[in-house]
Length: 493
Image 1 (spheres, rainbow, N blue to C red):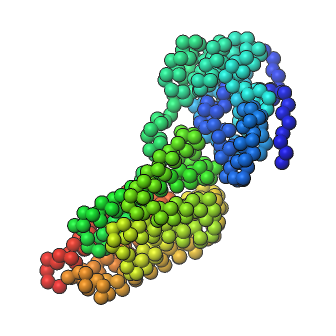
Image 2 (cartoon, rainbow, N blue to C red):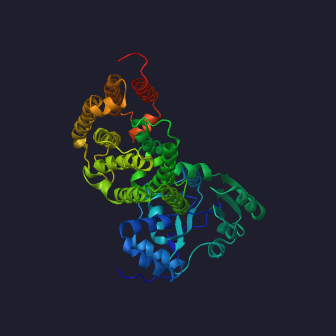
Image 3 (cartoon, rainbow, N blue to C red):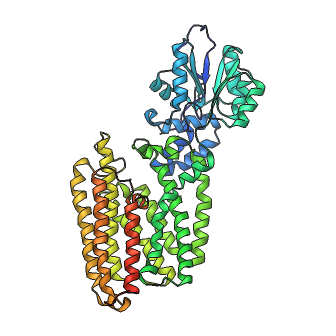
């Protein structure tokens, strides 16, 4: 597609007669929607066609207005999926019902501003950047002053809007910090304030998904299976590996949220994630990536885990970008990502993973991965959709996935039964017969998770669900007790 020649118009819409009430001029980014549409357009552009990054760099030198126009002509945002501020929408509807003229005045390009205005049906006019004029700050103030004098109300959220509020009759402030609200009070009559709905630091903490770190506890499993409870060196090495995986996993989750932004906004639960709600902007979460990657690299390098972390990162990114869209490949990849944590724990502690443990965990992790997909598919089907976003599964695949997952769970239990009667166990434990309790405990735990899944109460991730489930904690305590009794028997075997 060739580059677009800009036209000098800055107004899109219809002219109205002078209203009895001063017109209400409303900003778009950060005010009407809790995001920056330009940032999301660039994200969509690069995810769909990464090679266009070179065009983006060239467009930067054309000026802000032309840059926005070119991006807008290459991408299209779905206005039904944007995170609108419902408080602002209700306020605008009330003002429209009173007979006030509502005007969308935004530095966003007219290509996106017009689409949003048409979708909402609230605005009488649209004033937007047009490829020649970047309608922001003093430029916006000049245009509005020329159109209405001081006879207008302006609703915004940014420091650049101070120039507009300075020439407005009065102000409405939305989603702005208290320091900016005080600045606005000094230069204009503030009629109404819509405070931010989320605080930055708690929201950033939520974005790294600390509840998902429970998966990384797998690095400690080799110590437990080797009966090396008193090996302080091994516990320290595993702790460093745990932190490295937490940092890298959080990075991958952030990149996953960026790539799945549109899909998450259609999901019944994932729509509450910080990026999906607009509580965090694209640049804000990207600022987390550099320190997280640096932390993961430093920790893994110091422990000799760096090659494994690189492998984990590469597979995770491939999964985020493409593998999650491939039938069955996605669940086997998830299972492998669980196994990498086990390998890493064995590598840094020096307690290698036995083939028995590898076989058991392979089927167990496959069952959990399928369980995750079944849960997502059931949630999607309950919401009326026939297909998971960015997934290859259909509603009619549900029965097959359930059979596959339950079969994997029972296969894991069979391997555990064979393991507890092996010569390897007889050498390691004075009372190996006690370990038979593993079999019903493991099977009961997995069957309970499957029952929760089929009833629709499963979290999207079974590991996270189990970490918050009191029965799973009781089973974990029972497992620890079984190991202790097998290692230090109270009664003769």
